[in-house]
Image (cartoon, helix red, strand yellow):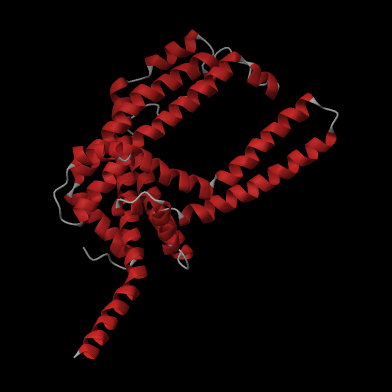
Length: 327
């Protein structure tokens, strides 16, 4: 496939790839979203609801953290979130392998593509580590220091200079976090795509992919921004339409103060309509995620072609010159 240079051309190509391989791309992602919703977020929200009923939200911050339920809740949230990320990696990398096969007009082997991650478990973590180190390592270290100073300032309240250092680190962290998130994150946008495409989860491949973004940062930014605006616009319209089939899509959990509230809520709650609303929203969000991944993959291939094209031309010219000399 010849990747189009124009952003609207790549959007069109992404839609065509999605349409022609819809089930192969959609089914694994949807099943993952369905299972993760049932297993993880239902447990998460059930624990959260049971905890906030008897919680005073106006307590002191440190007393709030001293609550055993809060500690358990934070630990549970971290475990669930890390598990969620770990389990989405094989689905994501499997989708990239399927997209690569579709672009090359090969038969898509969805099952083998998902298990592809397990054979590259350590290698894939290497690439994710390179991304984390490049984007978030320094802000993370500063954030940890910020928390240590905050705790030290709380226990040694007389040391005002700790507060000054704490405020300074907070400003530094905010600046670095915003800068790295906006600038460096975009420069690593294609790293995992390149690793799968070249089957090379190495630091050399990571650095080479970063070089593709040199002098292309604004182009990458506006391409992604345009696609994001299209997704948000269409998704908002569809969500508004789907919301008409549901009586109450957003439950204000803070308003649940007694069993009377729960009974009142239950009397107006329809499992059918709420399930339908969730199904439609999950379907749309899954399609948009896949579309975004396809577009990013095509964009990466376009940047790769543009970077390597001069080398190919130079090589061909050199070969012609060498042949003439030999003749």
